Every structure is written in structure tokens, then in C-alpha cells.
Image (cartoon, rainbow, N blue to C red; front, side, top):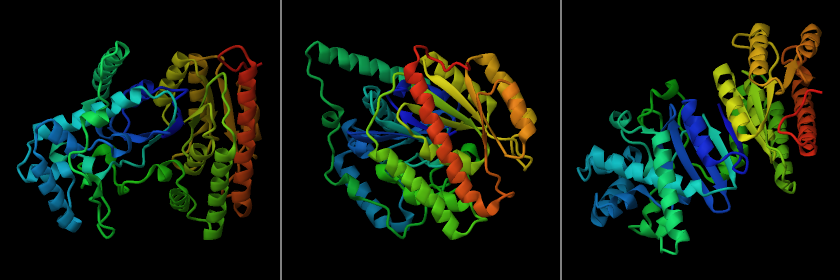
Length: 434
């Protein structure tokens, strides 16, 4: 369930509740002109975090809370520097050295997560993304050792309640004229250059086993090394690698043509002046097609649009409920029926349509279908679908599949812009079917 959007449409508190409620694993990243922070989830529980641009680090938290001395931190960092391929996260290194125990490690990591969330609660603007394929934090604030994984799983709702209480208390004190130190001052860097220790370029890839997360959602893929905000929000090279995986039966030239299309879409969005929309719109894509899901998440990060991708009807219901409660207009998009293994069948799609209509009869629904499925197209209109888009078939016209898919995605983008204009011109919170 990856998703992306703007904080103007969905607040940090709502996102944390959504991830907790749907029991998701992945990295939630948020960025604005102040920088970038990350919170890592495992089955809906918070297991790690990076404070804004790593301004507050786990080593400093341990020193400021009295768990270790500056000398202990310096010794551990030096040990890490000389460990090479055997280098462990700072917390694990300190435990191995006998400087802290599991309780102290958990307490410090909980404090860092709390500080991170308190800071983010005050953000009202910025871009966010939840990536289910990337579970990554800096090496200094990485996960606890595997045997501590079950012990260190913070209930997101409880953390959120504590963070909201602390945020309100700090705001109240500031409003009353009291001096409240920013967290960056309260947890000022214990050792200059604490962030200079980095994994050697030849160090092996970090795996789920290394981070004590081998059983999280049966994760088998390798975990990427820490990446910058540019890599997260404009990851051209990451796009290239992903497209190679989903278009393995196409030539390298054809793969590059599609990557160029994605890159062009991203550049176009960045050059386009920001535009405020009176009504927020959420696009909920129900699909098992990896190319379509990835393309949607990459291309349609238009201002005023939240993008959710799932193939689970329970998650879909959760999204719809969230949208309705926040005054966000949901648009449900169904991928076309596919007889291939794992594809959505007509029966599944019909069942999903009925469920959506039962939740919100005015919810706008859009259907994709292969061009030759004309009976299914007609039946879709009879079922109250707003629009049916012919989707290129990979096997039927493989020679033109890349070009056809680009045209298909471009057409849907213009349709989406029309929906946004329609929303702006309406005085209600929903797009009517007539």
C-alpha cells in the first residue's frame, strides 16, 4: 500500500493513524523547506525514526539522557569506524560493549521517535510518501538487534497521544511567553562530526536479517542503504531499476523509453507553478499490475491529489472512511479484469464495486478494461461507472505496448485535471455522477 500526497490535504496525525489502522510496514517520509524526516513502521507499529535532517541523533540522545558519557560515545564511534564490513548500528555496538542495556536502548530510541513526531505535528505543508519497498533509516539510528525486535515495537496510537500532549504543552508555554528550548538546542550534538561515520562503499548490502526484520511481512528483498531526499522524491535511477523488473520481457531501449516518459512527467510537474485547489481529491487505485501501480504513484503526484494503491478491499474501505471523515473526495479506479494468475477477475471487480456503492453511493468510480472486452465495458456503464478507459494489452500488441501505455497514462492525466477543475467549480464535497 504505497501512497503519496501533500500535508495540506492530510495531516501527520491522520497518516500515522492510517498506517497504524492498516497495520503496514514501510518508511513514511515527509519533506518541506525545513528538510526531511522519516518514521519506520512494522505491521503498524513504529520501530525507528530519523529526526529532521538527522539534527538529533541517537548517540546524542543517549548522552543527554545520561545513559552514556561523551567518552563512551566517542569510543563506540571509533569502534564503528574501524569495524569495516562487520560494522553494526550504534545502538547495537553500545550494547555489545556493555555501555547500555536493552531497556536503556529502547528508552533512547523511544525518545528520538517522540521528538521526531512532536516536530512533525506542527507541519502544515510539505510532501509525504509511504514506501512499502524501502525500510531505511540512517545507520546511527537503525533498528535494534533482532532479539529486541518484539520488545521494541511502539504502539503508534500511544506514541501519537504522548506526542500530541507534549506538543500542546510546549505550544501553551510558548503562547504564555515562557522560554521553550528548541529540541535542536536541548539535544545539541554531543560530539562534533557524529554523523561522519558512514558505511564503506564496499560494505555488503544491508539485509532484513542484519536489521532484525527478517519476518516483517515476509520481507526477502535487500534493504537499500540510506538515501537522500532527492533520491526519495525524484528517484530517476530507482525508477530505472524498478522498470527493468516489471518490463523484463522488453528490450533495454524500450525500458529506457518508459523511464524517459516518467522522468519527463516528473520534470513537467516540478516546472508547473503550484496551484491551490478548493477541494481535495484522493485517487484510490485497485490493481495488481505492477507497472500501472508504479506509474500512478510516480506520475499523478499532482497538487491536491492523494494517491493510494492497494489490491485489498479492506484497505480500500479504510481509505474511503478516512476520505469521508476528512472531507476529501474519493475517486476509485479499478484495473481491468485479467485472467492471468493473480489478476483481478470480473467477479472480484463486481464485488468491489458493490462494496464501494454501499459505502458512498456518490463516490466516483472509474474502470479500466482491455479494448476487446467491449461487453465488460458496456456492463460497467450499466453498473454506474463514470468512465471506462481502454487499457493496452501487453500480449495482444507487444510491439506498440510501451507507446500505447504512455498514451493511456497521458490521457488519464488530462482526465484527472478535468476532475480537479470540476471539483473547484462545485460547491459540494463530492463529484456527482450526473
